[in-house]
Length: 263
Ligand SMILES: C[S@@+](CC[C@H](N)C(=O)[O-])C[C@H]1O[C@@H](n2cnc3c(N)ncnc32)[C@H](O)[C@@H]1O
Image (tube, protein in one colour):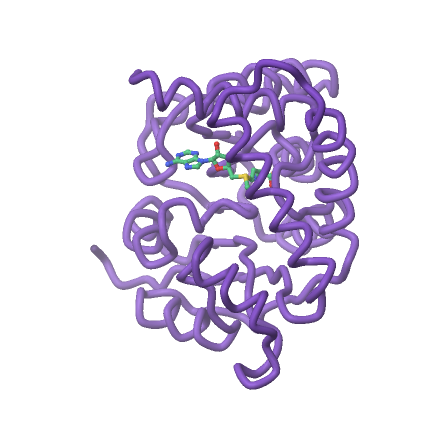
């Protein structure tokens, strides 16, 4: 790993190492949506949680879908170590296979590539790009398998968006768009989407409240690397934009069934 990459990875561990949510999320929402699918999941289901972080959603999926084997994938090794510890403590260690890997090309689960009944991804699809994710993930699903992910979306018309939020998100997440546009992208990529589910403030509070505390603590830390200083600056700016424009951007869940057309 190059020096710059190592410093960035260390900065991630320092900032997020003790947090449970690495993006907006809420175990009640995760659990409620998972329950909706429980009845139709086969007895030995295969589930993938891609960009799983430290396991906020993977643990809930393993608890709510006890018939499933869950492959939890993240590229940051320390997150996977934390997930394994948490899964064992929660008594679902044998249901979860936590692996360091690339969410665009996830590793096998129990020696089998793909064949998932459900691919889940919370606040992570932006990392590899939505369209890219749809292209890579569709072949990994069984025909009629489900893709469920959360993503940040504009929830107001362009004319009502503040200059501050527009400029920030254009730079940090140029792919951000409206729920309708994502539904259109899903359809074009070979999925049959349901209506998106918008979430409220709780997922943001779960992420930003502990993060605010963490940022204050790290503000006075000595010997910070440039990567850490930059990351702290970006996160402070993101929280500031949210505070000023919390009604402009929302976290929505997208639920889409893969069509049955073969590859
Ligand atoms: C915003 S965090 C969300 C984590 C988790 N789903 C949650 O809601 O707490 C995005 C995660 O995606 C992971 N990630 C980014 N690019 C990745 C890639 N190409 N493959 C696997 N994981 C990736 C990051 O390490 C990070 O844990």
